[in-house]
Amino acid sequence: MMRVEKSPVPLIVPNPDDARLTQRVTGIDQTGANVEIKVPMERPLTLYLNAQEIVTMMTIGDHPEYLALGYLLNQNMLKYDDVVTEVEYDDDLQVVVVRTEHHTNFEQKLKKRTQTSGCAQGTAFGDLLEAVESVELPKAELRTSWLYQMTHAINTMPSLYLEAGAIHGCVLCREGTPLCYTEDVGRHNAVDKIAGWMYRHGVDPADKILYTTGRLTSEMVIKTVRMGIPILASRSGFTAWGVDLARQVGLTLVGRTRGKRFIALSGEERIVYDQNLAYVEEESVRHQRKGEGGDD
Image (cartoon, rainbow, N blue to C red):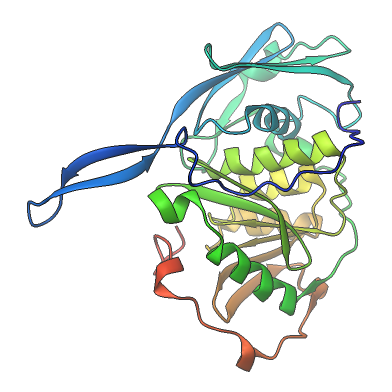
């Protein structure tokens, strides 16, 4: 199966120096002076599952194979025990094709769409609750020392956000160490890349933490549960349905993680308070993101 991989699992981190991911544009500032800045690229990627066109996504264009696999997994169109025979990407056509050993047909499911709360207009097909029914997340713990180590590492790591802004990030961590850090114009794309990376390399979700720069919405909760990860954290805030779903399935949900602060609204029993806050630094202005006064 595609997810069984004998080679070492690659560490994925942002590459702000990749010229394909940003573009320089000129304009003027508030004083009328000429300025030149970098902005993230946004390009279409059309996904096929076998011979059927599924969706066209807007993405920055990196890791198309992981994005395709993760999207199908998180939409419940691909099962974790399915056999994927090939993932083929054509850069000229901006098309990625995922081929499976068995026949697939999602015509009926494609008729039922829900526009999600993710930026860049994420779309979920079929029943949103289908992926979380009867789920049992693995036992795990979240040490506060890991949380502070993790957020500090993420905030100070080179990224497209710090280089060009206008982008979201998601990071898979084990304890306080980032393992897979992806970025995209929508947080749903970033988390789908992580799902595809985990599937491609057979990564065990039981002891992992998923971190996102965006809001803790129902979509993010469902994707995290679908991936089998027991802990979801964010620097941003919550939606009511996101909290309700997390409580239903026992997902640990931690938001507003900035400097010394955080708030947990679900799965609090997993948290171990082992960090002396006197030794935790507040977040620097350079690493603050949009919407710091709210929950964007």
